[in-house]
Image (cartoon, rainbow, N blue to C red; front, side, top):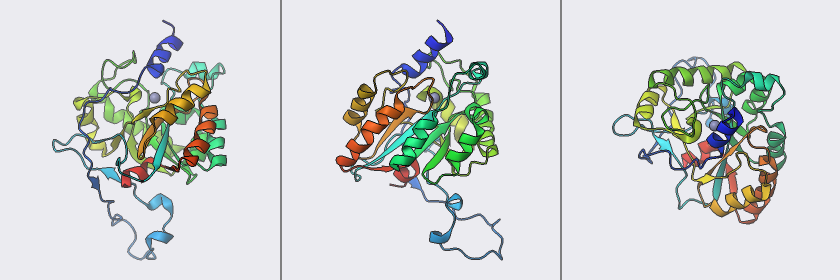
Length: 287
Ligand SMILES: [Zn+2]
């Protein structure tokens, strides 16, 4: 198979059902501001504090210390829905980007801004390195927050839609390298959330991830936007799947998801008509 075919299989395959971990629902209260805040600094009320200093909610580790997995908000919740977009670029795709392939999707980001739809973007470190000004723009806009989607986009467990697999001893390095690459762009709205490449994980990867103190974020609605050519079909799939508290997975890359912005343009007004409000994952997780 060609690389494109393999990636097609990777991204186009049904991404649901990879996980098997329990999902603790108890939200950990936001940590108090660290003592490193200067004692003489002016006292801020929460409402006047800049957004970047607000600590997003995370889920407490499971009873055996494994990283917790968040898949959707409470089902009894009000009509809220979180859109997530994976900004995929694999470690070995640099030459393809140099040859003119677009792993970004600035039109999608512009559309979300026009429609005022908040979103969580799960970015690979390699994507942030390739598109630093876009990463900074997304990561300094309060409409968005950026989560970690690994550096290389290789699988954290096997099998995973044909993705090359990394060792569990490489997991922490991948996560830290990615947070470093994202922050290096100047992005500030970076949240301690991690999305596994391909959505594939097991207890070993959750255990290896635990020291990073991130919450793993999956989804309950697959948009089917990977390698889709029919925006209406993607829109229909999302509209059929969304329930109160849903978390939708889509992509922010023209290369692998060329009709996502068209689909979003159709889905957003319809969901609003149905009474839905769009939130970021951090708000969904806060409950
Ligand atoms: Zn991905």
